[in-house]
Image (tube, rainbow, N blue to C red; front, side):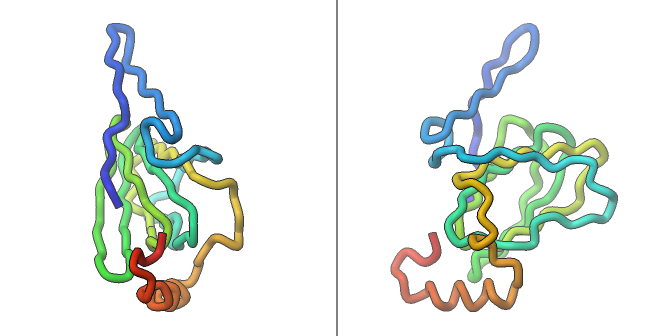
Length: 139
């Protein structure tokens, strides 16, 4: 769970932000998706991943990411297109409080794989406890 500045190339005709996998972020990009037109009061995500890493960026508007690695909980507010949030595997994430016209882009280290998802918070707690014996914990 690391706030990660992404490159910004300010130009007179508008800023440009390139993001290359394994260059600007610590993983290869294998999937890109975006979340938009989120109704007021809606919650997105509410899951963890076994191996997937993601970089969340607020391209427009703002939203909150609530993160839980099983030991520490943190809430981060994203509202800038030049700062991303790298969320590693083994972290429960919940996204809410989307502003009007918010646009969240997500860069993912793996293609979609339903088997990688942990969709129950109780299962997530068991997953964290089971990986506690590993020196590095969940990756």
